[in-house]
Length: 266
Image (cartoon, rainbow, N blue to C red; front, side, top):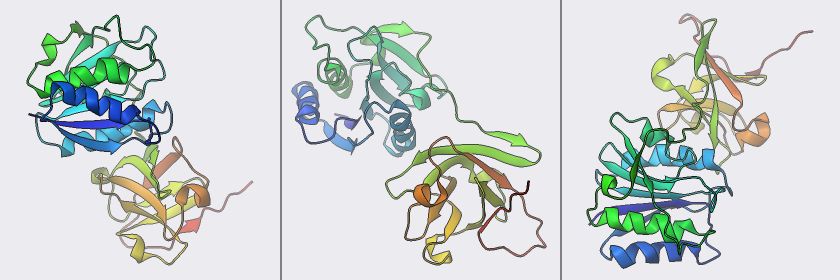
């Protein structure tokens, strides 16, 4: 019996999450259900796709991932089951499964919509039963028809410009930390990180700066993050998802500077 993760924008004030769990357990009563989060902002597909992409590789092979952030519920958007990297994923075809679809050998299938499914609750009536069947050993190919053009979200910008590695903020966590797509492996430990009018040397952790000071550091996901000790970087720096971030190599003979604002001319 498999682990089944659940990731939605349903919150916990209503019965919706419990109804989804019940639909899974009716088919797979021995499944282990793991709540990833139900606090995705309403209809925020990009945020849910980021959360899924960061989370799913931490689970063992064979895990089933049920993801329901579905602003197009009841429309002609497809319902998908995807098999990738020995994991199985069930979600609406709106870009949620972009990270899974990037895996070598990923295969997607379109789930049929039962005629008695509620047009406003496919999470319970379409996706949860499919996840339950996968948890009991069903194969993805047996649940639907092959899909060759599943929806994928655009990849966040990551490029080189005049020696800088240029990326963007891809997530703001509950602490107000700005998570970027700048891979630490491509940035030297003495780099300067620039966002807006701020330039920040890389630090190891929050304790390396004073209270209220900004810093850039390598986050637990392996990319550059920007934070404020004892504060929220999104508020203090005035940045949010999509903001441009640059990393510039610093000559090794220069000492590490303190965080500063860039002086703007003209």
